[in-house]
Amino acid sequence: MRELVILGTASQVPTRTRNHNGYFLRWEREGILFDPGEGTQRQMTLAGVAASRITRICLTHVHGDHCFGLPGVLSRMVLDGVASPVHLHYPASGEDVVRALVSLATPGLDLQLHPHGEAGPIAPGIDVQPLRHRIEAYGYRVTEPDGRTFLPERLAALGIAGPDVGRLQREGSLGDVRLEDVSVHRPGRRFAFVMDTAVCDGAVALAGGADLLVMESTFSDDDAALADQYLHLTAGQAGALAGDGGAGTLVLTHFSSRYDDVAVLADQARAAAGSALVIAASDLDRIAFPPRRASAA
Ligand SMILES: [Zn+2]
Image (tube, rainbow, N blue to C red; front, side):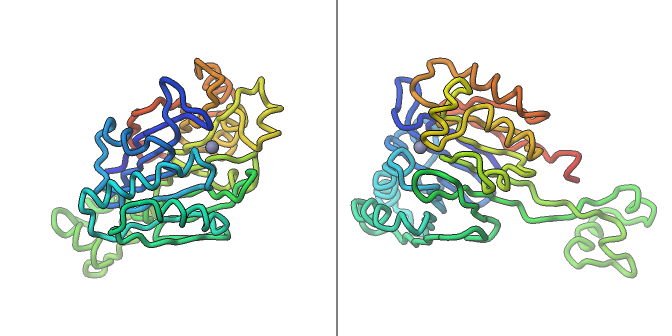
């Protein structure tokens, strides 16, 4: 089961309809909470996400709209009796802020701190890329393990069916038939999470080939000067990153409170996004992980 639950979609200032940031990614057995801003605990209740489902928390950076919900969520996990380890990932320069926030939480959680300070893998199937913001920030990518897709006509030609298919998959061969004779490589699908940043190499890398790409879209193209000044993306820049990277679905979020209607931002992104499907996120949206794309098979 792979699904993205949108907990909040506001940037610096929450509004009547938008909570501060927060995103929960169900990724098979993992439950990854990204950037819990204020109010995330209650948004989880409204979205039907149990605190016990969180196995990992990833912070892009330590500005308040991305982490002030942390003590509440951690305390709730203690209250709910979470006994398994929970991993917390964050930029190394945010150590003092993270430790302060964690110190406010009810003690008792097996919380394991994992600061990172460079691009690369941080956990099985998860890697980070640096972003360009006013403080150190990293985006995340979660990649499904590569697999193989069977070619039914080859299996049929060799008379392989039923339990033999599973045996061939597990053992890599069946008699003198090798797995690679009857299947092709299937790259794992990718989720990418790009928050506060100007256009930069890291954002380009994360957008590349993402099947589901969550990207900040703080400003309208009409306010590009503000985006430049505060190192944020415009909707059009987010769209172009998705389009140029061949992303499948782009989810826009982290909207400035100055926009009552973000449909305009979605249109601006769409105009630059090529074949990517563009969705402007609302709080409590649930987005199923897109089906495997034909080009990725
Ligand atoms: Zn922010």
